[in-house]
Length: 395
Ligand SMILES: Cc1ncc(COP(=O)(O)O)c(C=O)c1O
Image (tube, rainbow, N blue to C red; front, side, top):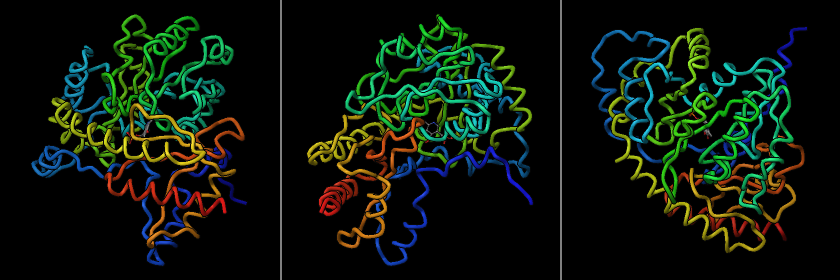
């Protein structure tokens, strides 16, 4: 009998997309499903991006070089310099989104059977990528009641073994919407130094912070060799379809390893690398604008959620997600109810069950993740649907 790999058998269906058949069924019946499940913003990318695409002159569409089109990589150099970080072009390699940057970073620092420390709940693609690489994720559990703060250094250190190669942080965080405090940043750096492990810092949402300034681990110059940043234009320029991200590190051995793998997969998209040059060189006017918009959306969602009886959540500080503990036993069943049964003015809601953002079994069963990626008017309607649906579900 033909058999596919064990590896793929172990990869779970994306929790973000698994309700698609039920959504299609509801939509076929004329029901409008308000989708707060995917981190796919409704905001338009900046005009410069389209202008650059339209102005592409050549009749050929060649591969880009594996280390990136120099003009593009230099635009990343300028981008980071706007955050006070001085990188050379050979310390940055463009990738196919942050998703590929994560894959390349993990492949560059681990071998089969190695371990990575992660904080759960975490962006679920890490679980699939770890399976692909044959690497074990060792979770440190964070709790909504505690605003997802990190535990003490000792608690984290307990999870470190001889096989630990890196500690992964996502800051600002998907799915929790939290931002690391300076104390937490220092704690992570100290652990990385003490145990000689890497820090893989996912900074996809760097600018989307509602209080304080954007941060990057590349600023931690005393830990320069430990830090590997995985990055993306998807959210900050509202263009996830461009499929551009990068890996950045001062560690030349890391960058040489990444480059070898980058050469095997050839290159990141050519057209999009060109189109992003002006934006990377002058990112702040656009990102400042969208942060204001996400802040308004955060306020609409959080204010309404915090008034719902027996709903537990904390005010997100960044990115555009919130983890919410609902008064239900199983959020999967509740979402099934939303899609199959509950209707309010011929509308319903799609949100993501949080269980699959955890690695430990039986955690997050009554939690959901809400992505506030729609306009405030729609978010108000969505929160009303959630409130009414919870009432009806309880009955
Ligand atoms: C934390 C985090 N990292 C990486 C990614 C992947 O981003 P990209 O579109 O750049 O591949 C996402 C996408 O939602 C994310 O939330």
